[in-house]
Length: 205
Ligand code: ADP
Image (cartoon, rainbow, N blue to C red; front, side, top):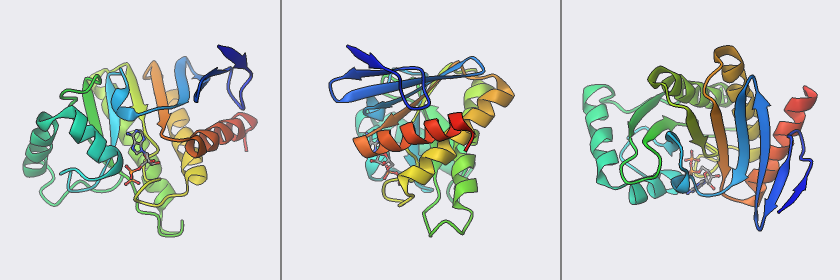
């Protein structure tokens, strides 16, 4: 396995088409790598859901397909008991991980990109902090995030990467939790955007 110094991170390890940047923020180990969110062996994976919580395409479809019907059953119950009009953007709820390797799924609704002048960055940051607040409340030790809003919701991935890393860094530095956070990108463009955002964050720009 080749190893080289990564942009803004400690190491990049090349494993075929996969790469991982490892960072450490106040004791939290943060990894940035390419992969499928439904493969992650973590306490919770985050779903880029829509406000209906009834499933959809992209990450949402993949999680429900592989996780089986118990996830949808719990989403239905959450809708009827807590969010009859749908989960608002920026909020998060938690269900079982069903048949996934992950023990739980945290469902959050990202903002739809409308040019950047409609509070999209604040709502996207809220997705990360609301998800991490649940992780802390329940005492989960590891969580994996996809690049929320960068698919069907159209958020440019380079901008979304900066928001995602900034929000998570702020949370872990304030709260000292959780011990492990992974950002799992589906393709090379997303991976490069996150590497560059990590480098910008390390330089403080
Ligand atoms: P949104 O509706 O919030 O934009 P999407 O699910 O359409 O959410 O896409 C979010 C990001 O997740 C996109 O960059 C997409 O390429 C990526 N993605 C899609 N499927 C997966 C998966 N199985 N694992 C990780 N990332 C995925």
